[in-house]
Amino acid sequence: MAEGPIPTIILCGGRGTRMSGYDPNVPKPMVPIGGRPILWHIMSIYSAYGYSDFSLALGWLGDIIRRYVVNFMALNHDFTVDLSRPDSVEILGPRGGYDWRITCRETGWDSLTGTRVAQVARQLEAKRFMVTYGDSIGNIDVNALVEHHVRHGRLATVTAVRPPSRFGELILGDAAAVSAFEEKPLTSSGAINGGFMVFEAEALDLFPSEGEFMLEREPLSALAEAGQLSAYVHDGFWQPMDTPRERELLEELWVSGDPPWRVW
Image (cartoon, one colour):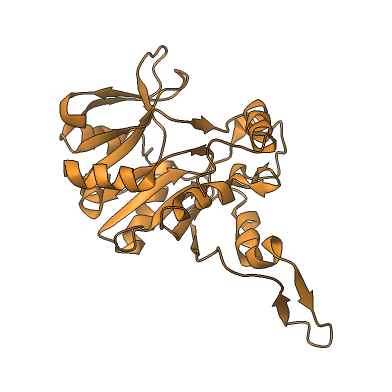
């Protein structure tokens, strides 16, 4: 279980242009796998390890995510509405399993990832917080990730995975330090940032104080240059959902009955 509440920021505001072939009117965190949004799968991974306080950094089509959160219990349980009292909804069956606390934060229609994280994190006033993308899942041991972060004593930790070269590359040094952060090199044989990040509040001091910026550029690069970025190496399953084909892959894995990211 988690040692004290550590909130998790989930980046939910991007346009997801490579997923537009699926449905251009659905924000990527709401694209379903097995009948539930990938956002539900992400929160389920964290809550399996006792981390159930979520802040959703909203932007493009954020109203769709807001409606999902407000109607979450009705969407995930049977219920009865007494039409003589239309404001009364009785949730049927067991209500356990969801001790989640979900906060929706507007961070700008087209804001960049770093700007979104900075806005939400500064409102949290938390000593430590986690950040992940709203379109990637894996069988990440979140407890082991946090323990790694605490043990190495740096201001930030990213989860290093090894998928295709179109992502930013982490250059790993000794003692799990990240010696450099390269944004989307043309070729790659190394690790990339798979999300599932942990930050100390002091890391925000290395974020730009104003303007738009990518989390994957100025903040993580500055942390790496300062020797304050650690890498938790994950050799298990990890998969982004950037394209309709990747969604189909995840759907097939879910239908198989043994999806590798289901740790709950």
